[in-house]
Length: 258
Image (cartoon, rainbow, N blue to C red; front, side, top):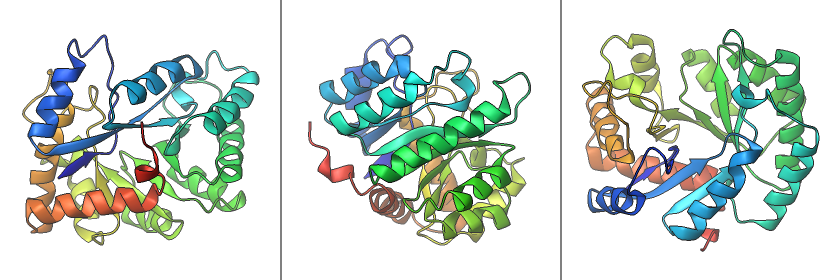
């Protein structure tokens, strides 16, 4: 059994979502974690969870989508988290890619969301692009202790260990399926069995050999096969690790009943 720990199931992209979920479950991908990115998407993500029992959700303000941010978004987030069944606050974090929203605003909103997550005893799903050290600094400064997932981790082994020490596991996705991704592969091989979860980030993150195609949760099987080969473990062991790790860092997983 697998859990695709990070996928964006988007109605415009997936014409027959029910069929996709059925196919995924038939292949052994039993459940799905769908984080949100902006306040405008929260109602859609919550509707997915209501309509499909296999879906668990997280709500948050992604740094990439802060161009239309309003301070009232934080108040609304706090209310939504209190009123609805979610497993985490996310996707939240920092992104230093060019031409993105002001980095100081990103940090302000990130710290505010950490405070909200702490107040509601929820873990977080972190977005980190060229910002791992800054995230680690803010996590320590805020004394955040709920842990969570570092989505699509692409940092160094030293940074990985620092996140793990703070109670996080690392999201391992399509990047490791590419032979050229030597750094990501070395980090994966050095991790303990308790330190990672598998993910697809569908429909966005391409898997090696399937470039140009819409990514789906079914591709987590490709990720698992690569992880199995790199770590010299069976696919079953990899599946057991990712399921156990996700349920450990997201303790509300089985408390959310639709």
